[in-house]
Amino acid sequence: MDEIEVHPALEKTAADIADMEIRGAATIADAAAYALEQQAAESNATTPAAFEEEMRAAARRLLDTRPTAVSLPNSLRYILQRTGGETVEDLRASAVAGAREFRQRLDSAQDDLGAIGANRLQDGDTVLFHCHSTDVMSCIQAAREQGKSLSAIVKETRPRKQGHITARQLRELGVPVTLVVDGAAGRYLDRADHVFVGADSVTADGSVVNKIGTRQLAVTARERDTPIVVAAQTVKLDPSTLSGHTVEIEMRDESEVISERERGEIGDITVENPAFDVTPPRYIDAIVTERGQFPPESIVFLMRELFGEQSMQPWESEA
Ligand code: RUB
Image 1 (cartoon, rainbow, N blue to C red):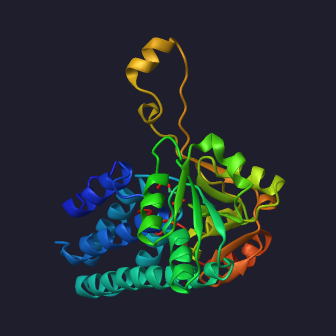
Image 2 (cartoon, rainbow, N blue to C red):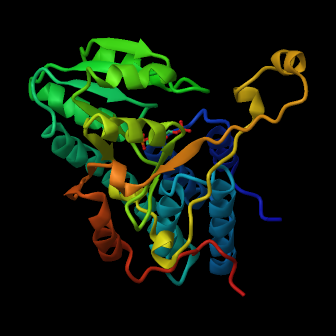
Image 3 (cartoon, rainbow, N blue to C red):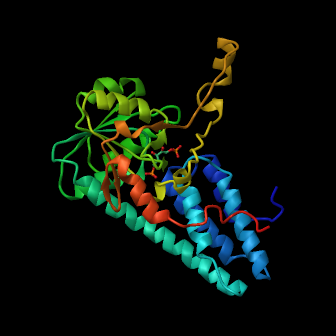
């Protein structure tokens, strides 16, 4: 257990990520970077070693919140690898600069990705959505700014109904929305020209880890020949999968699925609540990143280019 106290603002961000007050892979990465920036800016450490140990403890606290979205470790790694210097002030300045640079890059990556994803959409198209993804919304916003008229079918996305967030934001963009329960997706795929989903992690073989239900949707979409597009900026690429690691699927509390009363009425059952699933590359038409659009099987080349030689776990304590 860490004995080093982290900044109260970072502790609050960690709690908000764990409770999903802050949610969605890109938003989590942005919030984590900002929390680490605050930790650095307001650290009382008096020696470089103490400062570095404090930053590593802060990163570990953030990492403990949710295991699946790789944007979280990628954000912490980006900042810690740029934190260096002989004095506390040098270390502080480099950490703050790294965090700011990361957040700016995240913002511009999402804009660039949106412009590329929008090219896939034609005036008059209907798009089917699962969950809520800011990367996906960036594609829709860019298409709307190009003057394309779109219609939306939005899956509710049980158990937490993030589809409602998508529906609201689509309305703000002037897109007419039909909201359906998850089980109706197959029926409504007949009306859809595309499926757009986001990603929490993309693995070296081109598999996409995203909100539970994505795989089922992708398999059905493939069967109907409806193209399925994954909008995922490169911060969603998981470098640990290059060396054979697998992505941990978060299991959340059963209270998101069933109330205590309902459970009592049913009797002795097991309830499981996995938050994410893995869609194999054969069901995906394209992964749209800020670096262009890729067939899922070729994403490994981009991953090697971006993450080649980096130390994987800079938050581990020094021996
Ligand atoms: C959200 C989810 C989103 C991805 C991508 O899950 O699966 O599709 O995180 O989102 P949760 P973005 O609500 O459990 O965090 O494109 O905003 O990064």
